[in-house]
Amino acid sequence: MAHQYKRLICAYPAYCYQQEIEELNKKSEQGWHLIKGGVLIKKYNKNPDVRYRYQLDYSGKVEDLGRYIETFREQGWEYINTTANGWSYFRKLWDVNLPEEQYEIFTDKSSLQEMTGRWMKIAAILAILETILIFYFGVHVVRTPTLPTIIRFAICLFFALILIRGIFLMKSPKERSSLPLEKVIFISVFVLAVVLVFTTYLDFIRPNFDATYFADGGVSPIPAELDHALEWVDLDFPYSDNYYVDIDIEADSPICFSIIDDSDEAVYTVTESSISIKKMKLHMDKGNYRIYFSDYEGGQLNISVVVK
Image 1 (cartoon, helix red, strand yellow):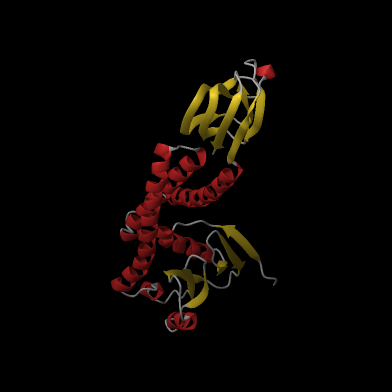
Image 2: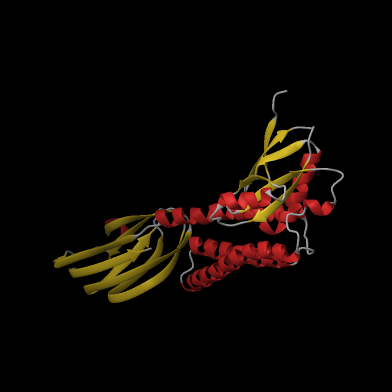
């Protein structure tokens, strides 16, 4: 008979490893047996003639994999594989005559605590790192809020809460929540991780404009009307967000500095002969904008602008 295989997307948080074991055992009762575990995708083959019981061990990085596998093999456990995040899958042929304790991979409370402790140690380190990131992004959200920073702050806060919750549930295995809810949370972590990476792209496409207009020899008078004003540069804003502008003006007489949108409406304008503005917040909609100089009597002119 030809072998039948199938792959299933099965997402379990680490603290739900007991529920994952139960699910694997149920599938084995139905004739589907795990041949490769994974973080998101598991592979099974069909064989109605056998039945297995499964167990999981969080091993992390194993220095001597051969010895590690042999230790469990001596207890009757067949090694399947270890996932990228450090969980190892084992199985043992089910025998109705064997007592239930024969299917426990940890034969005493201390060894179980040692296994869960390894995961909680990693989770605690990650939670501390997430807390540091929350503080870092939180400062930026307060001082210079931008869409990428707000997204990063919210995601890091979510990750930290999930890790803390996971540590609590791992320490208190009796405190089980709805498994479908846990799967949704676990998948959400992966989705939000992708969104977190996407914020790097948002940073990449943000305008990073830094230019100076310097006319030491002086410029001719510039009319006040926009139709006859001096257009300096175009700026493209790829998405609506808060942007921050530095403006430094040194001129022989007051000059009108304007940022104009596609509708020829001024989103910002100032008339000064000497001014220095740092990190001025402007909420800009997606689109093209232009910087104009107008209403100037003429003379020496030095203007520098930074947009981020």
